[in-house]
Amino acid sequence: MKKLLIATALLVATVTTPVTLADTPSQQLGTCLIDSLNGKERKELAKWIFISMAAHPEISPYANISNADINATDSYVGTLITRLLTEDCAAQLRSANNTDPRAIQQAFELVGQVAMQELMTHQRVGNALTGYAQYADMDKINVVLTGE
Image (cartoon, rainbow, N blue to C red; front, side, top):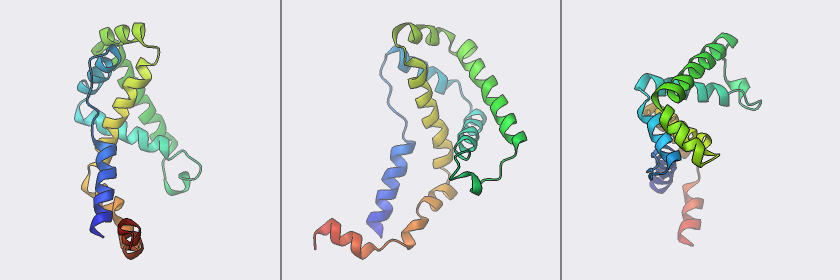
């Protein structure tokens, strides 16, 4: 059981650990975007990601999200992205765009990681991620791990 919980903790840590950034224009843009977000904005981005993921046909039956909630979140994120790219990080955006056609995508992958951190680091989410352990057959897993 302990090894399984450790494996789950490593998975969560992998998803929630921020990437160490080098000093390329794309990474400078990502750093600027992340540094320009406050806690409330990170939570709103996390909500937007959750709502977006809940649109998947296999997930949507488990989420009760109104069109008003979707529109409000899309509006908030659209305004936030506009501010980040045109005010807070305009110079970094220009530089990154001139050097790397994937700069914006890479920068927003980093922003997505930060938003996921807002979800994944909450204790209740951690508890939910380890809930499966009560159903896992640790004897079978340990046989594979130890070869016995």
